[in-house]
Image (cartoon, rainbow, N blue to C red; front, side, top):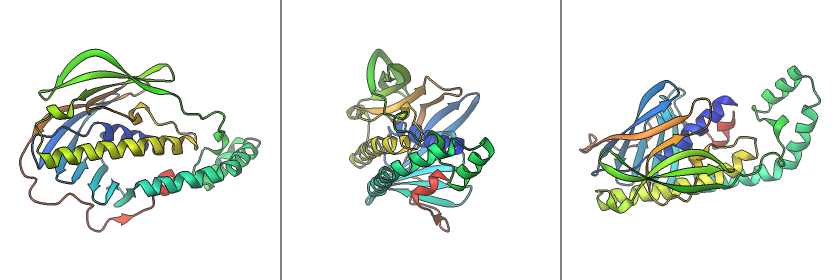
Length: 275
């Protein structure tokens, strides 16, 4: 459960802070802070493709965006596997989860009656799904909204405006958004980054509704409907809040090598993320 949540949390946060390149074949360096641990999250951009390395501070996790055909790919270097994520796949899982919800809720009620060790055993056999917490009445989407703070900042020489994410009436995160038109981007890079932003926001809406059915509430980093390019994210809740901030931008060719899944890596289905 903890591993799945951390992976989703890293994905959610990393996808918010990805953009603001100076030229084609650019590298962006984000500073990632999680508790006392600091790390770097490089972002590589080529026309039609973006590669986020060490996503959300997880050393063995990369995220690849391909515009045509449009998809995200989670690359797990520790297991040499990759997981494609498309609109169609998320829709399919959401439909299946909705159909299974009555059955799983009934099963969860039965599991709650078992001794803790037996309940843990059954939950493990079922892929670790938190069935003893599976209750639609408990897990409802909280209203999430963005509020201007009036604070202006500059990251890597790019101006941005701070917004606060309020979830269920409680401040959950702060973002700093840059106006896309103010970024010195070539047309191809600008189109790629804006397409990635639109795609990830669309997936965020679907993914939050899906994961909530399994008792996993994604952090505020999954908020959709952003009106700018995020240069910074700071979580305001949790024991080890996550923060990402653009540190520097460098241009120049990336060696001519296309950004793609390494050869020899095996594909795995999106549903495997729950195991």
